[in-house]
Image (tube, rainbow, N blue to C red):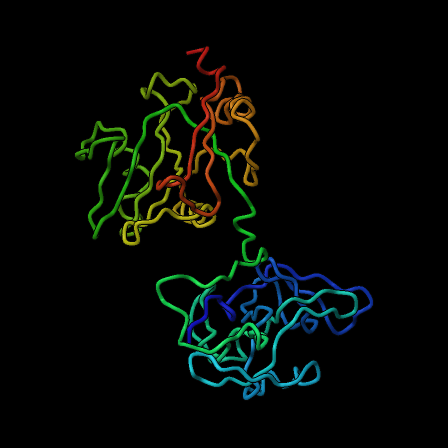
Length: 336
């Protein structure tokens, strides 16, 4: 079976709201979708299987028997195999739009993690309306594998992307990267790997917070070390501290998205660089961005910050490279 869309996925309920005038149903939110469920069936954080609209769910599974009232059984042939089921459509119940279907994960024999596609395990395919005879023509074969089908993603499945960007303060210090590759811990400055020594500030920090032992294997953390003896200590910080801005999965060759990055740093008991805005919209001009970069440091409100760094909350690429940019404060530059 070949599905371009993840029609049935393991998800978590992210919000629950009452429906006016309804005693037995309520609306639950999965990703960016709202759908109607039995009252009390879920709690926020509950695992569920979410079926997108246009799913053809198998009529042979008694779990879906309640859908008989809403429509007739449909038959489709996908990759030479026949499927019978009920089509999920947008409906309105007690004035509430319901898009898709959320059911407790306990109702299905599926395995996987949140976000995993379980369409094939349950036998779900995408419903396609019959093609009018004048458009169908005579079938020659399956769709060619050398080009993609036309199937845009729905906006409700892109709520993370639509969350936009986040902005962090750019700290005036020295770059540092920590890694553990195949069980071996290492420390790097901006351009070089550093040997362990008692007087080295980057290694000293790693020992002081127990990072050598608790660092996840095959991950790298990148940050800025600031404080006394570092780059003139323009922030006027006592002692030394490292503030992290990147987490990198060495095994997969990918940076972690913002949410997972924060979760990792918090779990390790470390600090992120100051986060100025978690829901930032890009300005229309460069001048507006440069103006935004100006301001006082969150680490020391008596001094100008060096600037800001903007990254997408969900990793993306621009011009072949990771999307990320910095804007340096002109006020900071004037005071250098």
